[in-house]
Length: 149
Ligand code: HEC
Image 1: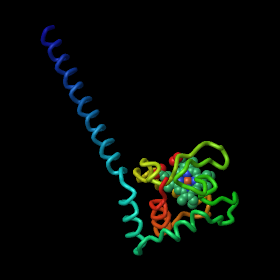
Image 2 (image 1 turned 30 degrees about the vertical axis):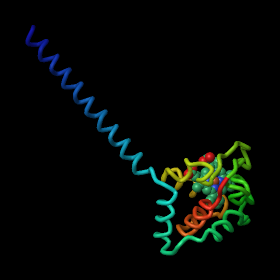
Image 3 (image 1 turned 180 degrees about the vertical axis):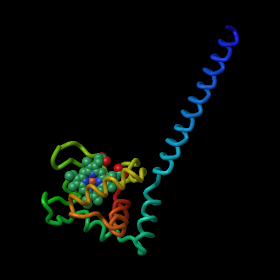
Image 4 (image 1 turned 90 degrees about the vertical axis):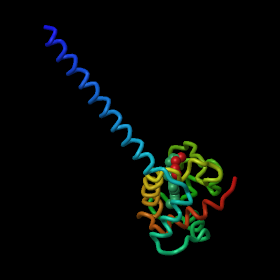
């Protein structure tokens, strides 16, 4: 009886150790994923420019931002992020407020690689009818970095 109890107790404690190990492994993986996605606007800009193989042009970025490419909804980036990306934007459909896109006005911008990639993909498809190239992303970001509140 006492042996059976002891062996069950040790079995239970092994289970606790295994669960604790699994939880800490999961925690480490989440932390690693977060670090992998964490970035800075400057780091992203350097990455896009390197991928494009050419320096970014803020002037070209501003032009892209303000251009209506004549797609379905007739949107430009400014339709939702407004003419001044250092100010609050307003979603063209939902009318929800969108926080400023310019990093100087909103330090959370361009600090999460996955979020940036997700919205570049979604918004470029809506506005240009295709994904933005690395050069276009570099240009827009370079221009946004010149915009102060
Ligand atoms: C139909 C409205 C709409 C249009 C048009 C639009 N956006 Fe956005 N954009 C959003 C919304 C909504 C979000 C997510 C909410 C938020 O981040 O505040 C967002 C987020 C982003 C982000 C994420 C930035 C970050 O670090 O969080 C980027 C980059 C972006 N937009 C770029 C663009 C560019 C470039 C264009 C033009 C090609 C564009 N957007 C056009 C609505 C729009």
